[in-house]
Image (cartoon, rainbow, N blue to C red; front, top):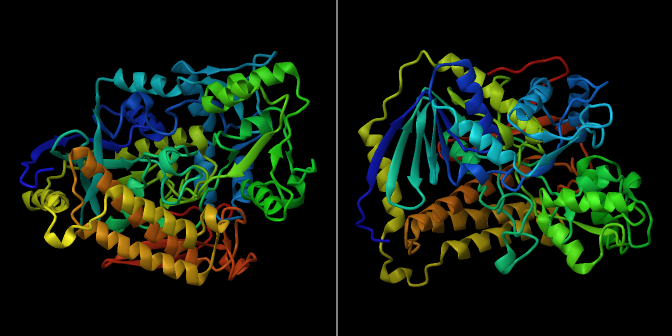
Length: 567
């Protein structure tokens, strides 16, 4: 890329700026337009029809209040699954919106399966079955049909514009050409999703992007919040998915759809021995493998021919590679048990409690900045419908900012952002002949996190010494990524470089959080070998905030039953 390249600067102003056109972002945009006459701008890195975690579709709504259940019972389930480290006030406000969001989706055209009595077909105690291969196109069509919503695609948002702890907007660049966007709004919603790619994945080399969570989710929203001084929470509660081996396809459809039990190579059912929370199911599998009773499987042999066919169809909705594997091998679920394994760790607030520290309005500690979906912390087990519910909450809360004047970004702030981008485009000096590519730096980052910060290679284990080593190595990589010219060929290569910066920023916070929780709270998700047992002294939230360039760890007491936290 020519370091003398001239950047075109485009300024766009709106009432409500939404960063990320995925699950929460689309739903928030629709909600905002239903309750106001204002305008929305969605900034999306890809194409909104197939972006985000719903890109390939899903075959179930995993958070639904079934007949006989209440939002409060869902709170109890999610808090127990998180071993107490969850915000009851956030879980309750989310749970109260679950069924409303599902009805809205059905109105938009989502096919929800019904049983003989005409009720939604259940898949377990909190799930309902859907034909969800087109769930994202349905959302995209609804958003595109609203004249007050503008969709800006193929742009990568890389920095918030914050002044006096008040959000003014964000800077973004085009994925395809040298355009710097200055996006301003009265309120901003971060809905950029969680983070993949911090750790070495299950599949190396050319298959490294075959993973459970979308590989293009780099933790951008987290990183921008960290750098802007927002308070973040519970990054130490990583999510390691229990998945079908090789294809990394979900296992819930097998476990809940046909009641498949977890068995070891001896045919012994082991899941009850370790417990049935999400992390315990994984921990049992890891332990059976470590002690020589692996491989482990979900026992599907013996299911009916109808169940066998239903499973193959169900996986076509969300993980077609699993169905193709069954068909190509001739070993369908009724013929052979399905081998299972853990993935690399992810940071994802839709399954765990990682993310922004928010109040019940989903406002972050930066005024006017809201968070919803996977990027919002404190509210685990939200899944698809919970992300919709949080998007609705955030959009309605943003209405209180609409009487404010549209903020003005100073020219000095714009030029600072331009100079920052140009700093990545310097011609390499003679001393930089050994410069490394973005891919090389990313692979080293993943190797460091895998070996020293509890990845697959270390059996999800870490210690105080290994975390200290990880922190030092990540610090060095971040410095190299910031200062070394990376021979960027075009605008897209610059985007990749910024994504590496985002991941490294988040890695630093994850390591600090892991070190601060001196216990093992979620075996399976991670084991602190210096503190292998649970310690109730850590019945608290571990938060962090960047001050004067340094990360500060904060310990907050649990929000107790019936309490509500507000900033």
